[in-house]
Length: 418
Image 1 (cartoon, rainbow, N blue to C red):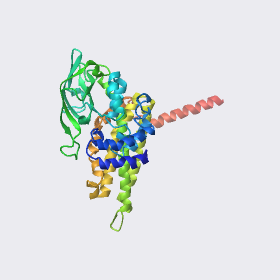
Image 2 (image 1 turned 60 degrees about the vertical axis):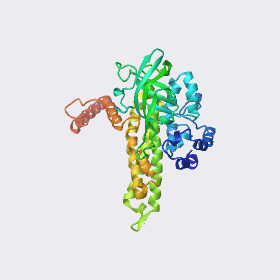
Image 3 (image 1 turned 30 degrees about the horizontal axis):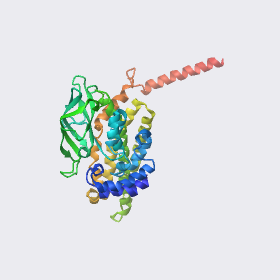
Image 4 (image 1 turned 120 degrees about the vertical axis):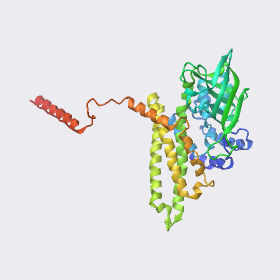
């Protein structure tokens, strides 16, 4: 995979490099270029490995998927070539678990074959990702649901063949039981893409994250994915793995940035010696290596925990990964930019593009701050307070307790030998 991605896939990033290019199924030239690559991936048994054999994948656990995504993260086109591009991976998992046979026939197979792409339409302009303030409603009307509202940052909306939409179906039940998930074909009347929202650095017409307005969008009753009121359960089916995959792909980007940093350090001379001989640069290299290895092991451990099926441990592990991801991305890419000087900040290196993605890493799949305080609350929940005035590790009390224990042990030994 490393050789294949480096030699065959990374060049695609240089030729088809406009925002959202990997999702543009109408670009016949790009699709023709990736077909032989996809054919080789399938021949090697590495296509859509997040899904089970019944859906054409290998059913790999999170550890193997993590190792794969570490390699794919080096390139924009890698996930598309390997059938693991977001949001299609999460959406395919939702369809596989909660879709009707008719929905699977119509959408899942072409999605897995890479013929179409999809959109996950959840966040809203007034409340971001907080379901407690969502206003998009779905109201039952006979044998149909009618959806009205606005969604924000619905990724790849302009290219999608279908949307998975989260909407309020019971205003009295609260966000955990009052929301449902709907599958909405893109050609359904009433879907209006107000505009495509771009990322930092994109041009005014380069946005691929849709600001979508749903105006009396009518779908049949069986468009509900999972149970009515079960949107949270459906959403959680896709989020855990997605957060891990973002983290492993971050390692891929950071590895490239680290390699570029090291190459620049041994190639560039200033003030009579190489950059590699400057202590500040040596510190960059050493710290980046250690931090990247620490983060990689943290993510692999979280993946292993997920494969064990312990839900509580999984929540803690994934939260830790989510907290650490934006920092490692920021620190290593920033150091690489700095070592490259003005060239690193220019548009003639990929570093500036990566640097502009740093803010997004702290927001995707939930803000870092939310994961931080949720993890802290969960870790503190099982901790018992000290029973006395001083902490349990207070040396004076601890010594006294140790002496009593030792004295009792010695006396027992003496009695036993007598």
